[in-house]
Length: 176
Image 1 (spheres, rainbow, N blue to C red):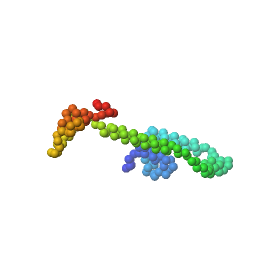
Image 2 (cartoon, rainbow, N blue to C red):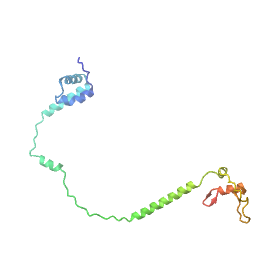
Image 3 (cartoon, rainbow, N blue to C red):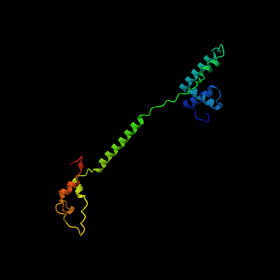
Image 4 (cartoon, one colour):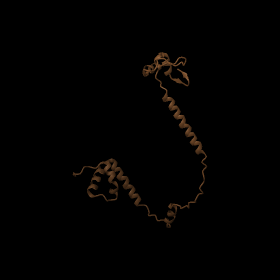
């Protein structure tokens, strides 16, 4: 028995070309022969290849009746076509102002929708009244009441219902 491990079918497949061309070193060739003798698959492959080689050797040598290379070269050589200079065609660019106008409209619409969505809070009115800042006390020299007949009241004199009405959001001009 040899010191080298036995070959597998994959090893024989890798060494097959060198084996058939007889360029495989002697120890490896012996290992391939051992495996082929013990493996049905590899033995069948070697018998088939041997049959193909012997039948191919019996075929007559064929020589072309004339020199074929010039015709083959002419067929595979790429054809060189002259590039014609095309006249530069002016493309009408009438669509550019329309595209710019559409982009401007889109920007304005997006900005408006974003402003409307962020400027109005969806917090209930009661929560906003509770979170409303406390009224600032009037300066000492100011009077507690506004001038009569103006209809104006100080924040401290307003009723809670009127304060709530002032902070209620107006959606499209209607109170909710």
